[in-house]
Amino acid sequence: LYGKPITINNTETFASVPFVIRDGGKTFAEQGIENAGGTKLFSISGHVERPGNYEVPLGTPFAKLLEMAGGMKNGKKLKAVIPGGSSAPVLPADIMMACNMDYDSIAKAGSMLGSGAVIVMDEDVCMVKALERLSYFYHEESCGQCTPCREGTGWLYRIVHRIASGKGKPEDLELLDSIGNNMAGRTICALADAAVFPVRSFTKHFRHEFEHYIKHGKPAKEHKWC
Ligand code: SF4
Image (cartoon, rainbow, N blue to C red; front, top):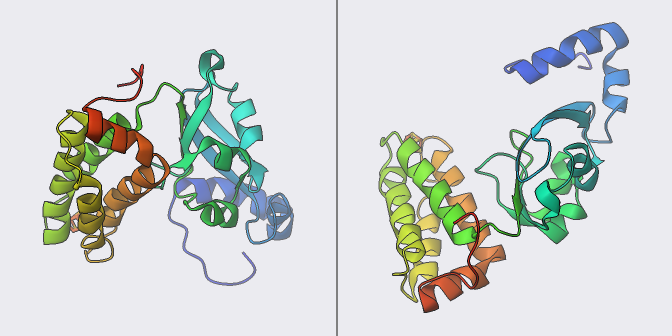
């Protein structure tokens, strides 16, 4: 934007070009904050009143974005948010409500802005079941070229599925961690990392739910979204 070569490779970038040509890169950048100029499109899905695409300046507080999306569906409490697409680490409500939607703020909070696909989860979500669904997706998506990804995504899914089926073993959380360590950064593309991030973050922030499920074979409370 400032005379340096750049790669234009997605429609969101293309959509910014007319504004930049008309009003200049500086004006565009000034809409955001230092280190994160301009606006970003967020696709908000999940338990909000008005899911959809929202374009806001980078650095907008998450609380404001949630408000734009109509707030929590049916007045439920916010439980967690995946701020940048399903591979981005999940963050608990209190962290997200204090966080701004820009690259540095989300990274500091322990996740990624990624694709801007914001998944909002309410208090009725069972985090074990949610992780089971995510792990199944990455297992299905692995193309199978790299052994750590081909085998690892299957192992991750089967272990989370075992826990979610009430047959988890006390050593399962450590096992998930160990498998993740042997996958992340050891494959051709980023899919293996994408499969590991949700596992690590769900079991870190919502460990008590996994531990309860393993110990009792069922969640602490019946969740609507199980
Ligand atoms: S890491 Fe990428 S290339 Fe390797 S098996 Fe997984 S999806 Fe295929």
